[in-house]
Image 1 (cartoon, rainbow, N blue to C red):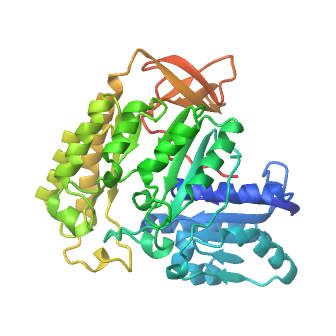
Image 2: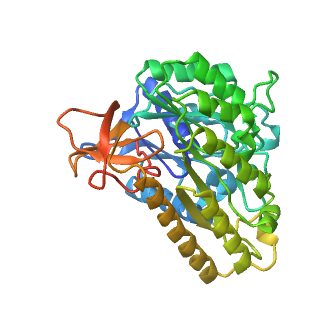
Length: 443
């Protein structure tokens, strides 16, 4: 084992990515370097940030934890995140972890590792989220591998959708101070980052707990006005409730506001939307999409949909299918409903069979592919500006994204990583739309 080496891995959302990068910064500043499996036998410390959004996520968490514990038996294994908040005791007692945190106390990880090195006593540290009222500040100044920088603006969720476990493992919404957000973005831009992605668990609640009245659109305006040299500002995911007149005005006025929005729908059936406790009506959703396209006609609009929610009929599934088709989403992320113990929906009657859910996933995914190709076709053989983010040695090409999230693979003698370049977007160099979105970084 090489002392002061660390391996960090994660599953799940962009928030989890931000959190592990923040921890990487903390350990790097204290003399740790990233474990290199090619030249070193085992890391001294392993940190895993987990996800619990679906049962499949939990299975992947367990597999990852067991994999690292089996591979590196003498390393100090730290497990944190939504799954460990959900089943921390099980992880400590059955999966070989040494230090288990929930979704808070991240700023204590380094000290807990040093304490374990002295005492060799396992630790389970969970806070009652009802007692956590303030955002946990862990500033991030750089990313080890990404050229796109994620900036976390809030934590927790107030929505309590009936299918979702997240409010129970992340707690209520806590907003980050807008001055801290702007300061971090300025620092990232100073360090060479050209694109910043705002992320959070429930950004629709941003600002509600702050003494100063700054809502989400106000935060966006503050960033765009104060950081004029930011090449591109992107939002990871935005609820329909945030698409107010001010937000749409900002889309119209600022070209460096990315030409892509991911707006979770979850269902296009009025009855199912109500059962899900989603905070919108479909007519309002439709009207806001119309207004967005009036100011950004070629914008890419993507969404999430859950199929097979308890008691969803074939007719109600087709209502969702038809609504997605009407909205002309350029990509639909389709998920079969997953029972999460402890949620309201888990107790609902008329659970839909797995066979029916699979068939509905297949149908809606086929529609997504058609809509995706329809959207992409409009940009073929056009010169489009891409921010190139990575190099793929297997294809000897650079991969980049446009403002509207087209993905291109481009060969060049010039090093293009973190550079902006116009290229002709065509059948030869285009990658599958959204192909690189869910790649995760292992540190």
